[in-house]
Image: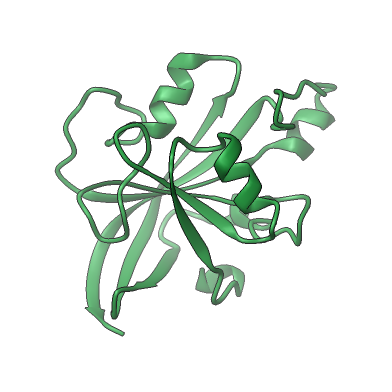
Length: 162
């Protein structure tokens, strides 16, 4: 994320959904996690939703500044000998208390469950703990996730060899 000066963040893939127990365990190591499979996302550069989650306020804060990403900012992902260049074009906040909103985060087309994907998208997802606490909301789920998530969504605009 050049706009944030964030370089070389390791992303660990796993089978599951965003912010389930396996993803939380990975994030607790101070790295980012990427759910894959029927209920999760796809890999970098693939058609669908490449979801990446990481902590914002704990465990090294790898996504500490992700909410500051603006529309037009680039996110570069290196994988399989390629560089995938995504441009942020949307922000979506969801609630862990609302299954329909969780479905929007995990959808192949972010925000549109059930719609078939035609583009490669990225969702960078992190907690809204500071915002929730500022509003007096201290709710947490069984894994310690706060009620709200901030999702920065981007579209793949270029691919090049690493």
